[in-house]
Amino acid sequence: MGREQACTCRCGRRSTTARDLESSTRRRCAWYLSHNLDQIDAEARLLLGHLFAQAPELATAAELARRFVSLLSGTDIAELDEWITQAANSELKSLANGIARDIDAVRAAITTFWTTSPVEGQISRIKAIKRQMYGRASYPLLRRRVLLAA
Image 1 (cartoon, helix red, strand yellow):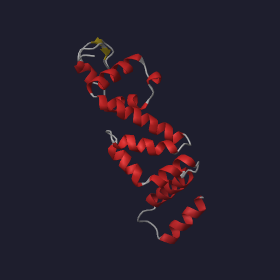
Image 2 (tube, rainbow, N blue to C red):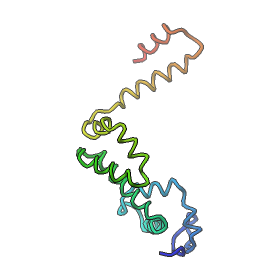
Image 3 (cartoon, rainbow, N blue to C red):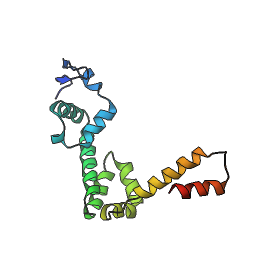
Image 4 (cartoon, helix red, strand yellow):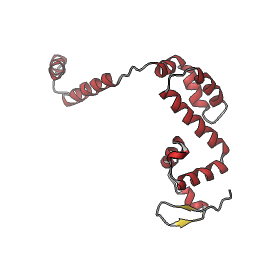
């Protein structure tokens, strides 16, 4: 693929310049990279083809990111070590190093179905009550209000 390639820019008109390809936002490109190619439209695949032609390491990083997402939704931790090894030799080196540092927590996240969502909800509720009462009341009143709100 050359720099001149047909695409549709954000305004909806048909264009063939690489400049219009560059008008795609980083967020949109990241969204495209995180999804399977069969889940996005033809124009987005065209954009990704152009990006991959310009930066082949981006294709590798996108594939590793998709594999990591599938690892988190599965239960197979054996593939995690292989993923870390491959990611350590790519653009995702920093992520791989961070995961390797906390490997036990990542393995637990893959193999267990426990979630801290209910606890996070309670923490948010308590913080909201605390913000409402900031500077107005003492600890015993805050404690009473939290207990009565439960």
